[in-house]
Length: 179
Image (cartoon, rainbow, N blue to C red; front, top):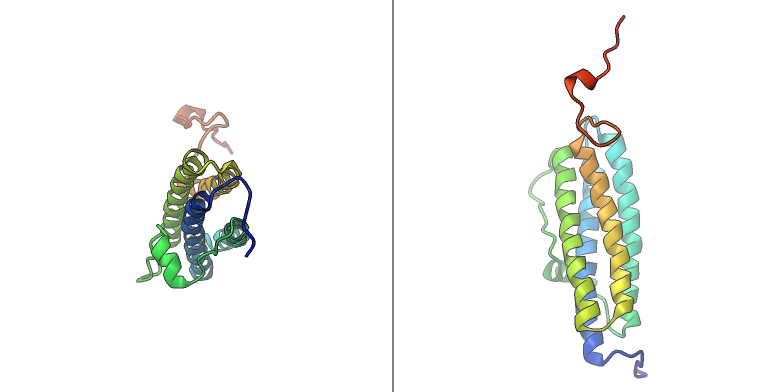
């Protein structure tokens, strides 16, 4: 194989690929969980959650491919087996039951927030420890997508009435319809 000469040493690239493979494993594990919840959700929230999770697992699939291709771009091979995803990932499976819809949402919020924390750390490591600003930028974009996914999910379960300025309405501010 031809030597890669992109301004990063073999050691720097290997370190970055280790981080990318961890992020790939987490993305795959949250994809599996999102897909499973998409199939299993029931109740009055079925339609909205079913559609939201379909949008999210499609975005996750695109991100997984981008992560794997980034690893290949840097001259390494991505993880790609279920055992490797579990070994390298920080997302935990909870396969013993089918939770209620709100608990499904809550678990996915926790998972996306875990991924966000990991990505923040990996952005710093890529930039500071490995001098790979390209991968740091790439991971920042992924982090922003997970932040939006987590926000969408959190918004679903928070569901408290607010004024347009974000304040909670007091009893006297709630308009009452008179017949």
